[in-house]
Length: 359
Image (cartoon, rainbow, N blue to C red):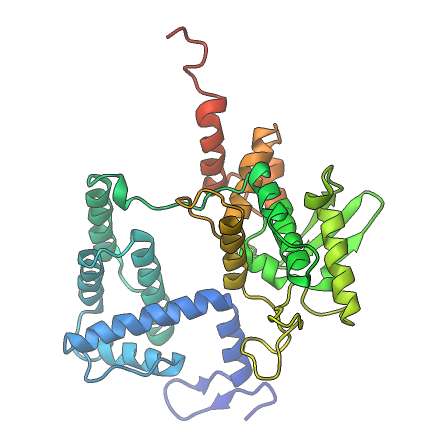
Protein backbone atom coordinates (compact mmCIF):
# COMPACT_ATOMS: atom_id res chain seq x y z
CA UNK A 1 0.00 0.00 0.00
CA UNK A 2 1.31 3.45 -0.90
CA UNK A 3 1.13 6.62 1.19
CA UNK A 4 -1.88 7.69 -0.83
CA UNK A 5 -3.82 4.63 0.31
CA UNK A 6 -4.04 3.05 -3.15
CA UNK A 7 -3.88 -0.72 -3.18
CA UNK A 8 -2.05 -2.30 -6.11
CA UNK A 9 -3.24 -5.62 -7.46
CA UNK A 10 -2.06 -8.10 -10.02
CA UNK A 11 -5.36 -7.95 -11.86
CA UNK A 12 -6.04 -5.97 -15.01
CA UNK A 13 -7.72 -3.36 -12.85
CA UNK A 14 -4.29 -2.28 -11.63
CA UNK A 15 -5.37 -0.66 -8.39
CA UNK A 16 -8.31 -0.24 -6.05
CA UNK A 17 -9.47 3.14 -4.83
CA UNK A 18 -8.60 3.91 -1.23
CA UNK A 19 -11.28 4.11 1.45
CA UNK A 20 -10.82 7.89 1.66
CA UNK A 21 -11.31 8.31 -2.08
CA UNK A 22 -14.42 6.15 -2.04
CA UNK A 23 -15.78 8.15 0.87
CA UNK A 24 -15.31 11.47 -0.96
CA UNK A 25 -16.90 10.06 -4.10
CA UNK A 26 -19.87 9.01 -2.00
CA UNK A 27 -20.15 12.38 -0.26
CA UNK A 28 -19.93 14.32 -3.54
CA UNK A 29 -23.66 13.64 -3.85
CA UNK A 30 -25.95 15.31 -1.27
CA UNK A 31 -26.93 12.83 1.45
CA UNK A 32 -30.66 13.23 0.78
CA UNK A 33 -30.13 12.51 -2.93
CA UNK A 34 -27.95 9.51 -2.13
CA UNK A 35 -30.62 8.04 0.16
CA UNK A 36 -33.28 8.55 -2.49
CA UNK A 37 -31.09 6.99 -5.20
CA UNK A 38 -30.32 4.01 -2.95
CA UNK A 39 -34.03 3.41 -2.48
CA UNK A 40 -34.71 3.74 -6.20
CA UNK A 41 -31.94 1.30 -7.08
CA UNK A 42 -33.10 -1.22 -4.48
CA UNK A 43 -36.66 -1.09 -5.85
CA UNK A 44 -35.33 -1.63 -9.38
CA UNK A 45 -33.26 -4.67 -8.40
CA UNK A 46 -36.18 -6.03 -6.37
CA UNK A 47 -38.30 -5.81 -9.52
CA UNK A 48 -35.52 -7.51 -11.50
CA UNK A 49 -35.50 -10.36 -8.99
CA UNK A 50 -39.28 -10.66 -9.38
CA UNK A 51 -38.77 -10.99 -13.14
CA UNK A 52 -36.23 -13.80 -12.53
CA UNK A 53 -33.41 -11.61 -13.88
CA UNK A 54 -31.56 -11.91 -10.56
CA UNK A 55 -31.51 -14.92 -8.25
CA UNK A 56 -32.11 -12.90 -5.07
CA UNK A 57 -32.82 -9.37 -3.94
CA UNK A 58 -29.52 -7.67 -2.96
CA UNK A 59 -29.31 -6.20 0.56
CA UNK A 60 -29.86 -2.44 0.68
CA UNK A 61 -26.23 -1.34 0.87
CA UNK A 62 -24.20 0.52 -1.75
CA UNK A 63 -21.80 -2.37 -2.22
CA UNK A 64 -24.47 -5.05 -2.62
CA UNK A 65 -26.62 -2.91 -4.93
CA UNK A 66 -23.64 -2.15 -7.16
CA UNK A 67 -22.79 -5.86 -7.23
CA UNK A 68 -26.40 -6.59 -8.15
CA UNK A 69 -26.15 -4.29 -11.16
CA UNK A 70 -22.94 -5.99 -12.28
CA UNK A 71 -24.65 -9.35 -11.88
CA UNK A 72 -27.57 -8.16 -14.00
CA UNK A 73 -25.17 -6.99 -16.70
CA UNK A 74 -23.39 -10.36 -16.85
CA UNK A 75 -26.62 -12.37 -16.89
CA UNK A 76 -27.06 -12.04 -20.65
CA UNK A 77 -29.62 -9.30 -20.02
CA UNK A 78 -29.74 -6.17 -22.17
CA UNK A 79 -29.82 -3.64 -19.35
CA UNK A 80 -31.18 -0.94 -21.67
CA UNK A 81 -34.22 -3.10 -22.49
CA UNK A 82 -34.65 -4.14 -18.87
CA UNK A 83 -34.72 -0.51 -17.72
CA UNK A 84 -37.14 0.38 -20.52
CA UNK A 85 -39.51 -2.35 -19.32
CA UNK A 86 -39.09 -1.20 -15.72
CA UNK A 87 -40.02 2.38 -16.60
CA UNK A 88 -43.11 1.04 -18.32
CA UNK A 89 -43.98 -0.96 -15.20
CA UNK A 90 -43.67 2.19 -13.07
CA UNK A 91 -45.96 4.01 -15.52
CA UNK A 92 -48.50 1.18 -15.33
CA UNK A 93 -48.39 1.51 -11.54
CA UNK A 94 -49.27 5.22 -11.83
CA UNK A 95 -46.02 6.56 -10.40
CA UNK A 96 -45.47 10.30 -10.82
CA UNK A 97 -43.31 11.18 -13.85
CA UNK A 98 -40.88 13.04 -11.59
CA UNK A 99 -40.45 9.90 -9.48
CA UNK A 100 -39.80 7.81 -12.60
CA UNK A 101 -37.31 10.42 -13.83
CA UNK A 102 -35.43 10.20 -10.53
CA UNK A 103 -35.45 6.39 -10.61
CA UNK A 104 -33.99 6.46 -14.13
CA UNK A 105 -31.29 8.90 -12.99
CA UNK A 106 -30.47 6.66 -10.02
CA UNK A 107 -30.15 3.56 -12.19
CA UNK A 108 -28.04 5.38 -14.78
CA UNK A 109 -25.70 6.79 -12.12
CA UNK A 110 -25.29 3.40 -10.44
CA UNK A 111 -24.74 1.67 -13.79
CA UNK A 112 -21.95 4.12 -14.62
CA UNK A 113 -20.34 3.49 -11.23
CA UNK A 114 -20.68 -0.29 -11.50
CA UNK A 115 -19.57 -0.74 -15.10
CA UNK A 116 -17.74 2.42 -16.13
CA UNK A 117 -20.15 2.75 -19.06
CA UNK A 118 -23.06 5.05 -19.76
CA UNK A 119 -26.50 3.49 -19.80
CA UNK A 120 -28.57 4.06 -22.94
CA UNK A 121 -31.72 5.86 -21.83
CA UNK A 122 -33.41 6.66 -25.15
CA UNK A 123 -35.93 3.81 -24.82
CA UNK A 124 -36.91 4.55 -21.19
CA UNK A 125 -37.25 8.26 -21.97
CA UNK A 126 -39.55 7.59 -24.94
CA UNK A 127 -41.78 5.48 -22.69
CA UNK A 128 -41.76 8.26 -20.09
CA UNK A 129 -42.57 10.88 -22.74
CA UNK A 130 -45.60 8.90 -23.90
CA UNK A 131 -46.68 8.44 -20.28
CA UNK A 132 -46.49 12.18 -19.62
CA UNK A 133 -48.62 12.80 -22.70
CA UNK A 134 -51.18 10.24 -21.53
CA UNK A 135 -51.42 11.89 -18.11
CA UNK A 136 -51.76 15.34 -19.64
CA UNK A 137 -54.91 14.26 -21.48
CA UNK A 138 -56.66 12.57 -18.56
CA UNK A 139 -57.64 15.73 -16.72
CA UNK A 140 -56.33 17.96 -13.91
CA UNK A 141 -56.71 15.27 -11.24
CA UNK A 142 -53.32 13.77 -12.08
CA UNK A 143 -51.34 16.97 -12.53
CA UNK A 144 -48.41 17.68 -10.26
CA UNK A 145 -49.32 19.45 -7.03
CA UNK A 146 -46.88 22.31 -6.71
CA UNK A 147 -45.90 23.74 -3.36
CA UNK A 148 -48.20 26.56 -2.31
CA UNK A 149 -46.26 29.84 -2.02
CA UNK A 150 -46.10 31.42 1.42
CA UNK A 151 -47.22 34.99 0.85
CA UNK A 152 -46.48 37.79 3.31
CA UNK A 153 -50.08 37.51 4.54
CA UNK A 154 -49.67 33.76 5.02
CA UNK A 155 -46.31 34.22 6.76
CA UNK A 156 -47.83 36.65 9.25
CA UNK A 157 -50.70 34.26 9.91
CA UNK A 158 -48.22 31.44 10.53
CA UNK A 159 -46.02 33.42 12.92
CA UNK A 160 -49.12 34.70 14.76
CA UNK A 161 -50.20 31.08 15.25
CA UNK A 162 -46.97 30.19 17.06
CA UNK A 163 -46.54 30.45 20.81
CA UNK A 164 -43.42 32.59 21.06
CA UNK A 165 -43.30 32.18 24.84
CA UNK A 166 -41.85 28.71 24.22
CA UNK A 167 -38.49 27.71 22.78
CA UNK A 168 -40.24 25.77 20.02
CA UNK A 169 -42.32 28.79 19.05
CA UNK A 170 -39.24 31.05 18.94
CA UNK A 171 -37.31 28.50 16.87
CA UNK A 172 -40.14 27.90 14.40
CA UNK A 173 -40.71 31.65 13.99
CA UNK A 174 -37.05 32.19 13.14
CA UNK A 175 -37.03 29.18 10.83
CA UNK A 176 -40.08 30.35 8.87
CA UNK A 177 -38.96 33.98 8.62
CA UNK A 178 -35.36 33.19 7.68
CA UNK A 179 -36.52 30.51 5.24
CA UNK A 180 -38.72 33.05 3.48
CA UNK A 181 -36.23 35.93 3.62
CA UNK A 182 -33.41 33.77 2.26
CA UNK A 183 -35.54 32.07 -0.38
CA UNK A 184 -33.87 29.02 1.07
CA UNK A 185 -34.25 25.37 0.23
CA UNK A 186 -35.12 23.26 3.24
CA UNK A 187 -31.69 21.58 3.06
CA UNK A 188 -30.00 25.00 3.21
CA UNK A 189 -31.98 25.96 6.32
CA UNK A 190 -31.12 22.68 8.01
CA UNK A 191 -27.42 23.11 7.17
CA UNK A 192 -27.09 26.57 8.77
CA UNK A 193 -24.73 26.92 11.71
CA UNK A 194 -24.87 29.60 14.39
CA UNK A 195 -21.59 31.04 13.10
CA UNK A 196 -23.11 31.51 9.64
CA UNK A 197 -25.01 34.51 11.02
CA UNK A 198 -23.43 37.92 11.55
CA UNK A 199 -25.10 41.21 12.40
CA UNK A 200 -24.34 44.67 11.05
CA UNK A 201 -25.95 48.08 11.49
CA UNK A 202 -27.95 47.41 8.31
CA UNK A 203 -29.25 44.01 9.33
CA UNK A 204 -28.25 40.36 9.18
CA UNK A 205 -25.77 38.57 6.91
CA UNK A 206 -26.17 34.84 6.37
CA UNK A 207 -23.56 32.59 4.77
CA UNK A 208 -25.04 29.79 2.68
CA UNK A 209 -21.97 27.57 2.44
CA UNK A 210 -23.25 25.18 -0.21
CA UNK A 211 -26.46 24.40 -2.05
CA UNK A 212 -28.11 21.86 -4.29
CA UNK A 213 -27.03 23.57 -7.51
CA UNK A 214 -23.76 24.95 -6.12
CA UNK A 215 -21.66 21.99 -7.21
CA UNK A 216 -18.38 23.79 -6.51
CA UNK A 217 -19.56 24.83 -3.02
CA UNK A 218 -18.70 28.48 -3.70
CA UNK A 219 -21.47 29.58 -1.37
CA UNK A 220 -23.31 32.88 -1.27
CA UNK A 221 -23.85 35.66 1.25
CA UNK A 222 -27.41 36.86 1.82
CA UNK A 223 -28.08 40.33 3.22
CA UNK A 224 -31.33 40.56 5.19
CA UNK A 225 -32.41 44.08 6.22
CA UNK A 226 -34.58 44.90 9.22
CA UNK A 227 -38.29 44.30 8.62
CA UNK A 228 -41.14 46.64 9.49
CA UNK A 229 -43.08 44.01 11.43
CA UNK A 230 -41.22 42.63 14.50
CA UNK A 231 -42.93 39.24 14.18
CA UNK A 232 -41.63 38.76 10.64
CA UNK A 233 -38.37 40.71 10.86
CA UNK A 234 -35.46 38.43 9.90
CA UNK A 235 -33.04 40.27 12.19
CA UNK A 236 -35.20 40.33 15.32
CA UNK A 237 -36.51 36.77 14.99
CA UNK A 238 -32.97 35.46 14.48
CA UNK A 239 -31.74 37.40 17.51
CA UNK A 240 -34.58 36.02 19.62
CA UNK A 241 -33.69 32.44 18.69
CA UNK A 242 -29.97 33.01 19.26
CA UNK A 243 -30.82 34.29 22.75
CA UNK A 244 -32.63 31.01 23.49
CA UNK A 245 -29.63 29.05 22.21
CA UNK A 246 -27.30 31.15 24.39
CA UNK A 247 -29.43 30.37 27.44
CA UNK A 248 -28.68 26.72 26.72
CA UNK A 249 -24.94 27.43 26.34
CA UNK A 250 -24.99 27.00 22.57
CA UNK A 251 -22.79 29.46 20.69
CA UNK A 252 -21.56 27.11 17.96
CA UNK A 253 -22.98 24.17 16.07
CA UNK A 254 -26.29 23.88 14.18
CA UNK A 255 -28.61 26.88 14.14
CA UNK A 256 -31.84 24.92 14.10
CA UNK A 257 -31.97 21.99 16.50
CA UNK A 258 -34.52 19.55 17.81
CA UNK A 259 -36.57 20.40 20.89
CA UNK A 260 -38.31 17.61 22.78
CA UNK A 261 -41.61 17.87 24.62
CA UNK A 262 -39.75 18.73 27.82
CA UNK A 263 -38.07 21.72 26.20
CA UNK A 264 -34.65 20.08 25.95
CA UNK A 265 -32.58 21.21 22.96
CA UNK A 266 -30.65 18.85 20.74
CA UNK A 267 -30.70 15.08 20.69
CA UNK A 268 -31.18 13.36 24.03
CA UNK A 269 -28.94 10.32 24.68
CA UNK A 270 -31.72 7.87 23.83
CA UNK A 271 -32.94 9.85 20.82
CA UNK A 272 -32.49 9.30 17.12
CA UNK A 273 -30.97 11.55 14.47
CA UNK A 274 -27.59 13.24 14.27
CA UNK A 275 -25.65 13.56 17.52
CA UNK A 276 -25.58 17.37 17.33
CA UNK A 277 -29.38 17.50 17.23
CA UNK A 278 -29.55 19.31 13.91
CA UNK A 279 -32.96 19.45 12.26
CA UNK A 280 -33.22 17.60 8.97
CA UNK A 281 -34.66 19.00 5.76
CA UNK A 282 -37.66 16.74 6.29
CA UNK A 283 -38.22 18.25 9.74
CA UNK A 284 -38.19 21.73 8.19
CA UNK A 285 -40.93 20.65 5.76
CA UNK A 286 -42.99 19.20 8.61
CA UNK A 287 -42.73 22.44 10.58
CA UNK A 288 -43.97 24.46 7.59
CA UNK A 289 -46.90 22.11 6.97
CA UNK A 290 -47.80 21.87 10.67
CA UNK A 291 -47.75 25.63 11.16
CA UNK A 292 -49.87 26.17 8.04
CA UNK A 293 -52.49 23.86 9.53
CA UNK A 294 -52.33 25.63 12.90
CA UNK A 295 -52.80 28.97 11.12
CA UNK A 296 -55.87 27.54 9.33
CA UNK A 297 -54.40 28.23 5.90
CA UNK A 298 -56.02 26.61 2.88
CA UNK A 299 -56.07 22.88 3.79
CA UNK A 300 -56.28 21.89 0.12
CA UNK A 301 -53.01 23.66 -0.71
CA UNK A 302 -49.69 21.80 -0.78
CA UNK A 303 -47.76 23.39 2.09
CA UNK A 304 -44.19 22.11 2.22
CA UNK A 305 -40.61 23.16 2.84
CA UNK A 306 -40.52 24.55 -0.69
CA UNK A 307 -43.42 26.90 0.05
CA UNK A 308 -41.07 29.43 1.68
CA UNK A 309 -38.73 29.48 -1.32
CA UNK A 310 -41.54 29.82 -3.81
CA UNK A 311 -43.19 32.54 -1.73
CA UNK A 312 -39.94 34.52 -1.65
CA UNK A 313 -39.78 34.41 -5.46
CA UNK A 314 -43.38 35.43 -6.12
CA UNK A 315 -43.69 38.06 -3.37
CA UNK A 316 -40.43 39.84 -4.20
CA UNK A 317 -41.27 39.86 -7.91
CA UNK A 318 -44.77 41.14 -7.18
CA UNK A 319 -43.26 44.21 -5.51
CA UNK A 320 -41.09 44.94 -8.55
CA UNK A 321 -37.77 43.28 -7.70
CA UNK A 322 -35.55 42.48 -10.68
CA UNK A 323 -35.63 38.74 -11.59
CA UNK A 324 -31.83 38.63 -11.79
CA UNK A 325 -31.51 40.01 -8.26
CA UNK A 326 -34.15 37.53 -7.05
CA UNK A 327 -32.24 34.67 -8.67
CA UNK A 328 -28.91 35.61 -7.13
CA UNK A 329 -30.38 36.27 -3.69
CA UNK A 330 -32.13 32.91 -3.65
CA UNK A 331 -29.37 30.88 -5.25
CA UNK A 332 -31.09 30.16 -8.56
CA UNK A 333 -29.01 30.04 -11.72
CA UNK A 334 -29.30 33.08 -13.97
CA UNK A 335 -32.24 32.44 -16.28
CA UNK A 336 -33.52 29.56 -14.13
CA UNK A 337 -36.57 27.95 -15.75
CA UNK A 338 -37.91 27.11 -12.29
CA UNK A 339 -37.76 30.74 -11.16
CA UNK A 340 -39.28 31.95 -14.42
CA UNK A 341 -42.13 29.51 -13.84
CA UNK A 342 -42.80 31.06 -10.42
CA UNK A 343 -42.71 34.55 -11.89
CA UNK A 344 -45.13 33.49 -14.62
CA UNK A 345 -47.77 32.79 -11.96
CA UNK A 346 -47.58 36.48 -10.99
CA UNK A 347 -47.40 37.82 -14.57
CA UNK A 348 -50.38 35.69 -15.53
CA UNK A 349 -52.53 38.44 -14.01
CA UNK A 350 -50.16 41.32 -13.23
CA UNK A 351 -48.89 41.58 -16.82
CA UNK A 352 -51.81 39.96 -18.63
CA UNK A 353 -51.79 41.05 -22.31
CA UNK A 354 -55.62 41.22 -22.27
CA UNK A 355 -55.66 43.87 -19.56
CA UNK A 356 -57.10 47.08 -21.04
CA UNK A 357 -57.73 45.56 -24.45
CA UNK A 358 -61.39 46.52 -24.24
CA UNK A 359 -63.12 43.17 -23.99
